[in-house]
Image (cartoon, rainbow over all chains, first blue to last red; front, side, top):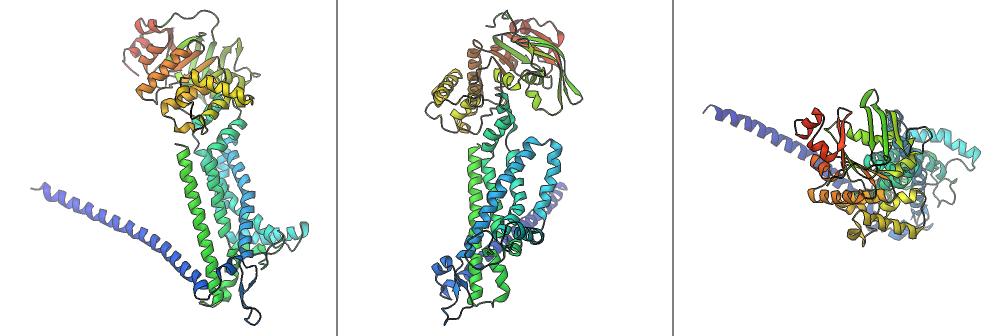
Length: 308
Length: 258
């Protein structure tokens, strides 16, 4: 008779904790889902208003090359062609990935396969430090060192796509390196041993086995880097020159989708067509980052199937 | 039935071998001849040094940080630890099969062709011939001949282990070292590997580490018993199991420890 209430009390205590834990974690997850859903809904409704409320033609928007939002109707109406910015975004994203991808993967190979263990221990915090540096510091450094350097030694004003590409390359390098290191560390040591046991050299093992075994991880690393480059606004805005025309050279000032938003958002009135157009650009960014995330997940799934 | 110890030059002569992981000594003064042809089984409890010893026979321990070897492993009269020895050639001629099947993340064909390719064979017809011969020798050809371009990772564990054996055979070794090759496999796959080892004994020298004494008794001609980093006894398998000379051996094979 005495034991029963004891157990019952213990149980109800545990039951209460269980329920609290359940409610607490459910609450957290609900917040996240609501935040994501809220952002999507908001950006979609604002971004689509440009086309449905302000009657801007979607094709003129996406493929127009003239960005003149303040042009009066008598002068030919405001023009909202954002193709130069889309092109700018893609150029800086792909070029910085093309530079930082091979360097990051090379650094990862050195850290995991060639450096002695203490070398890796020393490199790891350096890489993490680079990830943690705020983008404004990258931008400021680029502005102070890189822009004058390009102006004097390469040509042009210094501000332009080239400066943006270089700043972004440095910014995404640690991301690519650290994900590539993880990918290489995940390769089973037995596989490497199998290659050495057949008389392969270290280089043959790296080139023919590890590059293959790490391939899906490397692609994931580069896509994460590209997502970061595509979404970066501040550092790029500080060095890219914010030109409005279709870029014809890497040394010319240009803009990206993100820099146009940050440059203009303070100068427009909420609800105006100029403001709504910026939301449409935000929608474009949101869609692109969704594409990046799904690409990473798809590759990750394929990679897991391959290694099963 | 286990045969007599083959006569003639040993495939490997180990002389006074000491092995260290950093400061810790793992093998003590091992002297042992690996007879040419046939199967030598290395038995002993966990931590007895039998796997470590196997890894010293083709310098795979070079890959282990802080590993150090004293003494000699003579192969064709030369110490494989001598400074001017080509490790690539040692490992090519003294192949190794590991505990867990470790196919490369490549196709079945490319797994087998990997060894010949890294040793410089480019000719497609010759590679085709080597791949077919090796897969046949590893008793895997009939199961995979229609899907040579499929991923090796799609094979079952037992098939993967036979693929790994085919991969070793493809570089034309003299000696095949096997480190508990069936410990990760189910009984029927184990039987197939044991049958395969029985075939291989005719053309190669096989040294196999096993924690399974029945397996040693089934497949080997000679058995060496290791304990605490020392070679306790080395004799024809039947003799070692039926009339062990040393008390430690008797205790181990009668299941008193290990």
